[in-house]
Image 1: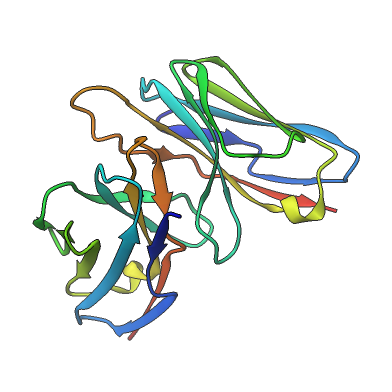
Image 2: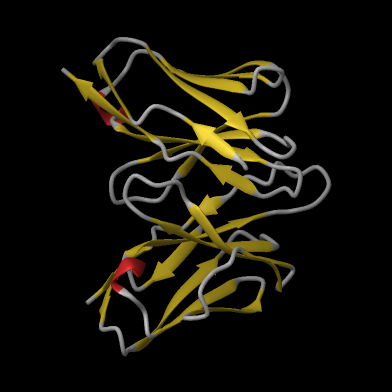
Length: 115
Length: 109
């Protein structure tokens, strides 16, 4: 596989469920990101991992918990979500460092519906 | 606060030219990106500007004026497949991307 992959592509869960979103990048990048995309709103940066260390957490509720076991894999653990958390969750990766354009490559996203 | 403004929606005709504007106010500037996003798909990179001026890439061009906090994406010889949302994003002083809400471009035959 190439690029950035995400699973599952679609997820419906109740407010009391626990689920995880998975992202894998095959580009050799050293940074990975989770974004939330709601209709007609800007992409919201949730978490950034650089060299497997979390470097950004934009006041995201604790019901979202990221995990980055290595530079190629990123997870988003979900528990006791709210209906307003329904959105498209996008994973991205980039190469950071001198000489890099920091261009981000996105996965296809997980369409999450919380009932 | 940080802000990226772009029109919500634009309509253009197949074969024509369209210009999508983006203005920004950010804490620092380390480059501006344009991405294309088709409905239900991931954003894909179109262009990157860090210096003032015009960058041309095939049918697409992107312009930047840092003093004015302004950029535009120019699409020539429009094709039906260009119907998509176009996202403007600025990398701030912390090297994080600040995103606009996107411009939905509708191409009519």
